[in-house]
Amino acid sequence: MLIIGERINGMFTDIKEAIQQRNPAPIQEWARRQEKGGARALDLNVGPAVEDKVGAMTWLVEVTQEVSQLTLCLDSTDIQAIEAGLKVCRNPAIINSTNAEREKMEELFPLAVEYNAELIGLTMNKSGIPKDSDSRLAFAMELVAAADEYGLPLENLLIDPLILPANVAQDHVPEVLKTLQQIKLLSDPPPRTVLGLSNVSQNCHNRPLINRTFIAMAMACGLDAAIADACDEALIETVAAAEILLNQTVYCDSFVKMYKVR
Image (cartoon, rainbow, N blue to C red):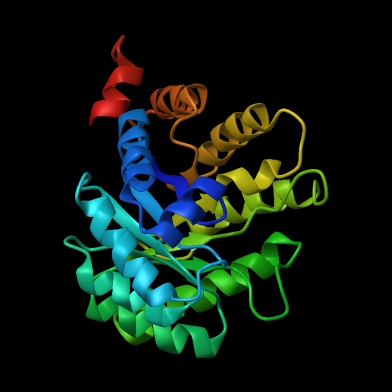
C-alpha cells in the first residue's frame, strides 16, 4: 500500500504562505515528517492562490528534493506547471491528474510517456463524477484504452474512482468500493488504484475515524495507493495491520515499524 503524503498543499495556510514567501522551512519540515510517518511519495500542490504556478511548482519540487528522495506527485490543473515540475524531478514522478475527457488525455498521456511518469486517471469527465459503479468503470475503461493508445505502460496508470464526502454522498461509498473491485478485472495485469482518502471525511465529525475505517475497507477491495495524512499514526497502523490481514506482507511482531521503514 502506497501512502502519498497530502500535506504539502497550498490549500493549507502555512504552505500557501511558504510558497508566496519562498520560505523552504515549512515545506521541508512537512516532507520530513510525512516520510518519517510512513509516506513513500509526496503530493505537491501549489494551490489556487499562486499566480505564477509554473515558477511555484519548480521551486516546490527543488526545495522538497533538498531533504527527500521520495517520489513526487505533481498535483495541478495547470499542465505547464506539471511539466515544469517534471523537468526538475530527479526521479520519475506521478502526475496528478487527468480525467477521461479526450482533450485532457491527449495532453497528459503523452507527457507521462515522455517523462516516464506515472499518471493518475480520474473516473469522470466534464459532466462531473458519476454516482454508480458502472459509470465509473466505463471511465476507467476509457483510461485503460488511452494508456494502450499512447504507449503508457499499464503499471504506470493509477485509476482514481473518486470518493466524495460521506455527509453529502453517503450512497457513493459502496459504489466506489464496488468500482475498486471491478477495476481489477479490466486487464491482465490490472491497473493500480488510488484515492484521495481525506475527501471521504470532508466536513464530517471524527474525520480520522472515518478515514481509518474507509481505507481498511478500500484495501480489502483492491486499493493500492492513497493520498492521505501520513502523520496520522493510527491511520498508518491501520494500513500496516490491513496489509498483514490481507496477506500482502509477512507477519512479524514489529509490523507497524517495518511498514514505516521499508
